[in-house]
Length: 81
Image (cartoon, rainbow, N blue to C red; front, side, top):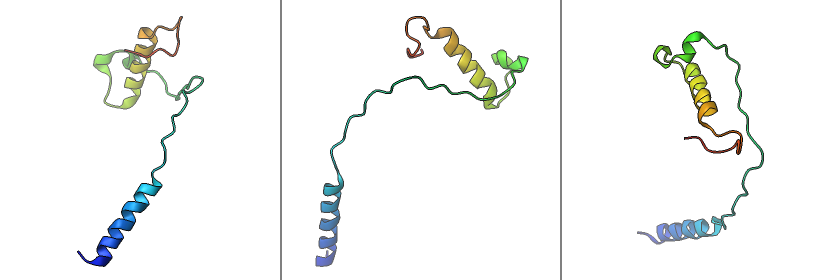
């Protein structure tokens, strides 16, 4: 290794050490995020055996799963299964 190469590596190392700051903790999020999209519900969307390979029917199935499994009365932000 040449002197120039060692100096460059040392400079990059020192620059990397300087640029690393303290990691600050983030507060917990407040409120509720609601995601919605516009789509028509076809009858085949409600039968998992007849859904097509596109993502829209599965989004409805996931929403139905969350609506049926999630304990809404006590804590509407509770995690799903």
